[in-house]
Length: 369
Image (cartoon, rainbow, N blue to C red; front, side, top):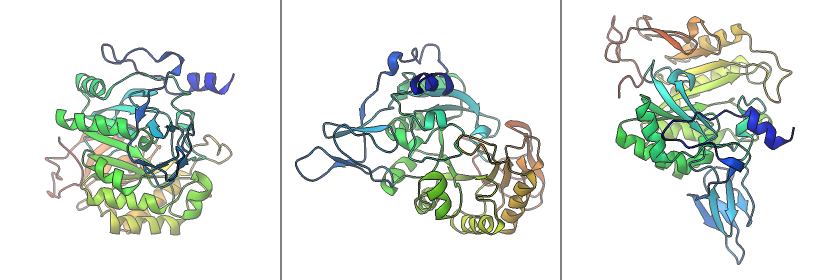
């Protein structure tokens, strides 16, 4: 089986929304849409500089960026995945993961292929490490996407599965329409984006979960082919822009699980993102190019949660361990159980108007919209 056929079978199957999304695009026909945030390079050639993310790709005519989703065609930069998602699903918002955003509601979730990282542990590598020209896609315009989300009773639209930055224009146009319809915009991102496009997007984003994959430059260099500092800058920008921020830290045994690194990360988050930023310590399972690494011991995640509490973080969670009490939300003041979960299922909610019913402490999050 060749790479193209494998991607067709292995990638997320599109959810075809009757009356809105049309049939999967035959032959993976590209959807070209002129990109934002680029400039023409100096000189007589047709080179362009992509200004969307810190990679700063300089592309000659016909070249595609590191993300595989942006291409220079005759001196203009085009997004290849606009209105052509390879994955369209309806998920619990808890799956993104968000624990302090509209619990027990649905998120209309979309992705177009591509990513500006090369994480060796990626769980969606079949579509993140591919081009929109290699996946089976669905034609779904921003207007149709928002209409489908509203019709399905989804309280939010989630830009997820791959790296949303690579389909920035599609996300941006959809988010503007969703905001007018009263539907929240949420995303799960690696945070590798330049400040100017991030600030523009933040105008329409309500919540973002940032994958803070590690807390050292060496980890990012070796396992992600990226840099740590731009991700930290993104977290600060989102916080200052009034976007609700949650953080996911996939804990990988032998790579980013030492207690000092976790403590340094938690102290930084408490200082720069605030005590209420939820941090999801997620259990790693063998995946992609790290199949030889053992699943994260649950005790390691429990210790990470204890470290986070000691650093002053109010909402540390344990992820990928269904039924563990670390999935639950507790009042940081009186320790009352506020939201009980098992995996993506919300069993009970005791919040009253975003406050603890016992001590009336205000609980950080988005509880109504």
